Amino acid sequence: MRRVKPTPLLILVAIILPLGVAISRVPGGDTEFGVDGSYYFQVARHVAEGHGLVTSVDLYHQGLRQLPSKTNIYPLWPLLLGLAGRVMPITVAARAVPRLLFILDLMLLYLLAVRLTPPARPAPILNAGHLAVLLFGCNAIFFVSCAFPYTEALAFLLLFASLLCVERSPAAAGAIAGLAFLTRSQMLLLCIAIPLAYAIDRRWRAALVAAFAAAIAILPWVLFLATFVKPLTPSALIGMDHQTPAIPEYPLSFPSQGLAGWLRGLIVAFNPASPFSFVQSFGVAALLVPIGAVHAVARRARFGLTTKATLLAGAALSLSLAGVHQRFFLEWLFGYRHGLPFILLLVCAVIELLFHGGRSVRIGALAICATSVIIGAIGIGRTVTASPHPWPRAADAELATWLAGHDPNAIVLSTNAQILSAVSRANFRWAACDDDPNTIRLMLHLVKTDYVAAYDGEQQCSFLRGLVGPELQVVGTFGPFPQRVFLMRPRLP
Image 1 (tube, rainbow, N blue to C red):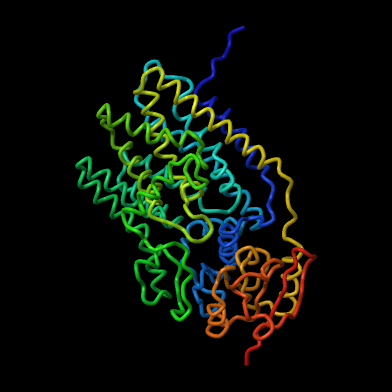
Image 2 (image 1 turned 30 degrees about the horizontal axis):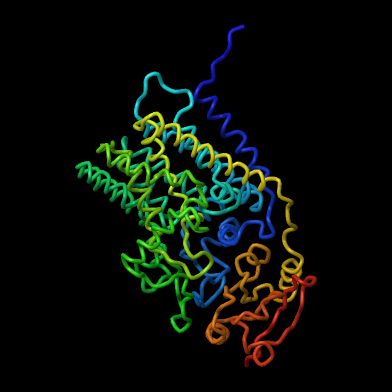
């Protein structure tokens, strides 16, 4: 009986199919959609219900004068999710759409890696595309991001599609890059990298066409922002709209420290012992990037247009994070969702070492990649088999029910604003545990705020210091100890 040899396509299916099954079985967590995912979810819910691009959440002390309010959050993902929510329940769409996009992402990454690979005779059955899909599909950060309604699934679809168009159509490459920016503001750098790649290749007309196409794709969004962001500044394209200057914006990051700070961040990026490095996301395979860079320089490598665009995009999107030193959430973002574009550099490094390195280099690179894939797959297995948490939590559900019955249009200040906005149809203002209580006083006095919600354990947070009792009166307690939420009303005229 004649044996059927596996083909590259069959191998690709054999890799993607288990990943697709795994992501379809990811249980919901106690936040169900994640923190940022919950924010996008509530905007998408407004879209699905015909309200347009509006938000019920005031983030990072925006001081929105009314809620719901038009939002300048990047619009493409909430729009897509909201439109899907018109043909199926929005909660079903929030799970199904990003998981489907995850599969499409891996397919496009495969095509991109194959495009970047030098021709080989005979063509290998297991190629660089398969390895790229394994490295990215088994990246636990990317996997989880696509299991919930975050922007990553759509952003990477557009990122890979844009790079795949570079050789064939500068207009398409630029326009898709512009759409990627409308999915995640970080992708603005892609809109710069692609025209720059054409310019380096001395394709001046193509560079202008790509830049113009990106600008045209972004223009409708700028016109929409001009209807409510006054004055309209470039920062409105990449940051939250701040409407009440007297309320200080929450400082998410430390002030820029110039070249010295960027170099310090770059050291963190490739430090295997750092919990914030690329190694935390991509495993030890992340170290192949500096190794591949040295190898390419040593052999005086010359690259084609798509490789140049991929390298420029990967470097701009991932290494620029060295200049972003956070004071909130994570100190550095290399090992989190923001660092996932590093896959572009990793794919180029793997191709460099496998196709231009000696036998020992190839074996070493494959062993390192296999180690990262195995460890990543184990992490994904733990995610898939984890016990689901009840959602919404009892305290949040009880609070949502009370608000719906007593004050459905209320504006509630909480450190859990995003999560509550996915559970309740009320409106929420965000606060941080370490907020200065004077900032909270300004929010209570200068913009309409009906209630403050605080959880067990937040009694020690600075944002409540001196407020409970003299300025805030408890009007309700919801949920069991130690996960209660206390609802307080301001003692204001």
